[in-house]
Amino acid sequence: MAANGDFSLLERPAHELAALLDSGEVSSAELTRLALERIEALEPSLKAFLTITPEQAREAAEAVDSARARSESPSPLAGVPIAIKDNMCVDGVACTCASKILESYRAVYDATVVERVKAAGMPIVGKTNMDEFAMGSSTENSAFYPTHNPWDTGKVPGGSSGGSAAAVAARQVPLALGSDTGGSIRQPASFCGVTGLKPTYGRVSRYGLVAYGSSLDQIGPLTTDCRDAALLTRVIAGADPRDTTCADVEVPDLAAALTGDIKGLRIGIIQELMTEGIDAEVRGAIGKAAEALEDLGASVGEATIPHIDYSLPVYYLIAPAEASSNLARFDGMRYGHRTDQKASGHIDMYSRTRSEGFGDEVKRRIMTGTYALSAGYYDAYYLKAQKVRTLLRRDFEAALEKFDILISPTAPMTAFGIGELVDDPIAMYMADICTFTVNLAGIPGLSVPCGFSEAGMPIGMQLVGRAFDEATILRAGEAYQEATDHHRRVPEITAKEGLS
Image (cartoon, rainbow, N blue to C red):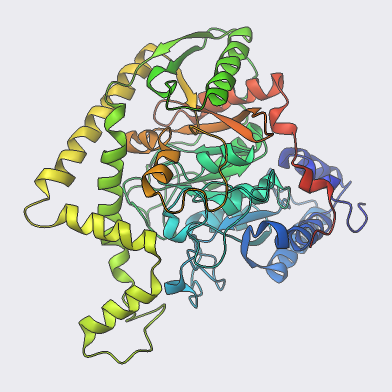
């Protein structure tokens, strides 16, 4: 049994904790207590959470322990605590999307992924901070407070799933869920030195996820290693009749696919993402990672995505266009914030409510998207962007005929300082330049830690695979992690108990 304040147990990956739970060496109640204590200790420094749910978590932990005592066969991650990004509905719990417009909203149902997490016996300890409505790359766009990077609290954790990434990196929780529209799982995973998987579009149900870009959004895990990502993806993935975009495709045993053997695997380095626009330290780390994969028996060559230079304008036409439609429902009529100012009519009330409730970045994207969809501009902007998206998808298909996996940096730089890019939207958008092409193509992407900068900040490598072939990128990622120790390093903050 771990003593109060002894958080070393939480430094183990979830699959090791699950083994300890199965053997009876530790209880879910104890793990959950430690997670809640660690959250309380570190939150003044990190601000990774928006809502803590101790009663719900303890109740779930006790139920799992009771089931084990009755010799009931638990699921592989039963009893392991988890955090949920605050754009996924948890029945009876705040679902703010880090926005003032939803500050008072309490979800009235569970998202499909939350249903599956609960059914797997995983105690939910809280909801994590994010960029408002998942629009951002730093978690500075939260309406409530920015999250801090555990490796350097003066730097951002990435975004929009920065709270989930920071919570896992700081070992507040072993597992967390995030959502990824243009890199919002993988980029914060890179900045925080954890593992993050964006599954294939349609692999995981989006029912109960507050939509940003409906053709791009996908829920996925943030974990310490690839084995945990495989186990958690198996929990949340699979067909769902409540989400018509969720594919009725069999979910393989992803953990069983982690054989450690990548001999003969064909790996292509995306050349367009190894240019001068990528920080030299990042390029160096990817080069060393490619050598390590080669040493493990893979063959490494040069891959090309010819239309990748168009991906930024394509993404920032399609995603805002979908956002402008999805966010139209937040008008002060049925739920969420409504202005207290006297309005001259319902249009004036809508305007005042949305002006007060939405932050600057959300407003910027709504206006951009509305313009792109407006009469006279639809063909010139939105329709043309969709055509170029098709070209990008074909580029990936061609590259993945030649190679089994494509690799690149996850982000062009390591984590930047809080406040450093807030006044430069284009520079902020460029933080996702390596990731949003994968969302546009609808294929799976994985980020694993592959090194550290001279300043001690994590660097991530992105592995991209064919549609519904998460198994191969996870197998390669796990083999790489078995040969290296980047993912095992923990930020110094985890050694300080009771930070204030």
